[in-house]
Length: 405
Ligand SMILES: [Mn+2]
Image (cartoon, rainbow, N blue to C red; front, top):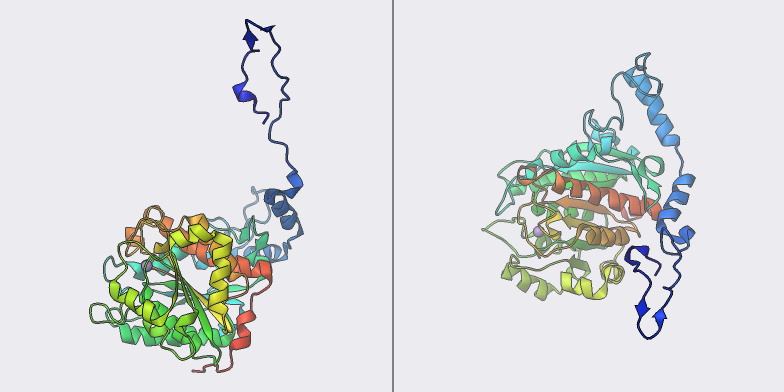
């Protein structure tokens, strides 16, 4: 300890007389090996990243948006904004990824974002029908590069935005059929489906859309404060019910359902009874604190992948403490800190996933776009982790019953 902030004058004692104080070396920081820090390793990783994708985008932007005014020194700036820059301008697809107007083209990309603007399964606060728009809007804030991971999505994968599924407000069943059809189309094309909800009732039709394209077995890792596995709520298949129906599918067994962060005063008892009966795997926040983040991810992967061929991730933003996600349907205190949930999410995405949904972002209740921003982060974190671990595209191996419309 060489902190000089607490330096005292030399100590004196009547017995010993004046004594010199200990000699202190003045350092600006503790003695550590800078090259061993993640901060340094991230810089090394960035140095190795390609910039070809970026150069292509700049060239394309100048071509599409016309060269900029003569007075502008930076000749990469076009007259009309095209692509990532500037972040406050442009037409916002997710991360300004290309909008695929003809959905038959989604298979040309490694992953496709699709919006599911649907909140008729909501039992308290509505508004998640605006979730996809809210998430897309604030996604303009982001670059494609992540510092700690040392990945750049633009350089390492291709992403498109397929737009939204045409849902039918007030009709769960017709909307479920539309959602499954849209998801199965994307999955069959080979693109990894990334779903922007929407309330959590979409979990069932999203999983059904993937499950019908394969004879293989699918596990689910579910981040939530709520258990979401009762048969019905208010007489319908509301957002409290997706896992009852999803784990009824023959190739999506409940024993491969891992539920992280469940707890608090909003878990309906019929849901708890059903999870007990089906023996799903529930870890509360206290369990996760006990095991730690790495161990939790290890447990989740072991259980979700046990005799399974692929894993789907369902991320409810209300799994976070409600202080971080005011814009959600059923806010509940005591959930994850953002960095905890993101850490676990990155770890469980690393071996590759067959789909991801982020649900319950409700922009009308949001403050400063903070909840929608978390929704963006969930998507890029999973994609980034797969890029970092070379597992993007792994899901294609289970497509043995592709659909064709
Ligand atoms: Mn929830």
